[in-house]
Image (cartoon, rainbow, N blue to C red; front, side, top):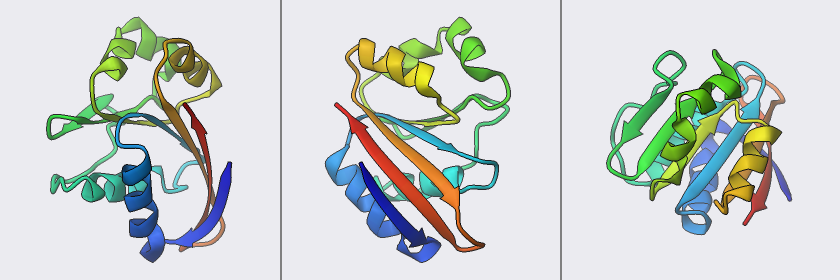
Length: 138
C-alpha cells in the first residue's frame, strides 16, 4: 500500500507511474463525489498517449478511448446492474480498464477471475489536494 497527498499539478507524475507499472488490468477508483476520480482518469488516459476528451461515463456506463483503454462508472446503477448487463466480460478484454465507484465485491470477483487489480482510494483534502491510497492486487 502506498499513500500520497498530491495537487492536481502533480497528477501527471502519478499517472505516468501507474501506466509504467500497471499497463493492463483493472483500476478501481473510489472516493466521494467530486473527490477526483474522473480527473485522475483524464491524466491516466493522457499518459497512455490518447488525446480523446475524457468524461465520466455516468449515464453511458462505458467509454472507450482507443483500442485498449476502457472507462466505466457504476455509480448510478451499482455493481449488480453492471454484472446483470454482462459487463464483467468487458473487463477481461486486453487493455486497461478504469472503473469509477468499484467496490470490494467487484475487487473480489476480479481477483477470483485471475485479473490484475489496482485499487485507488481518493480523499479530498482541499480544493487542490487529494490523498491517494494505492493498493495493488496481482
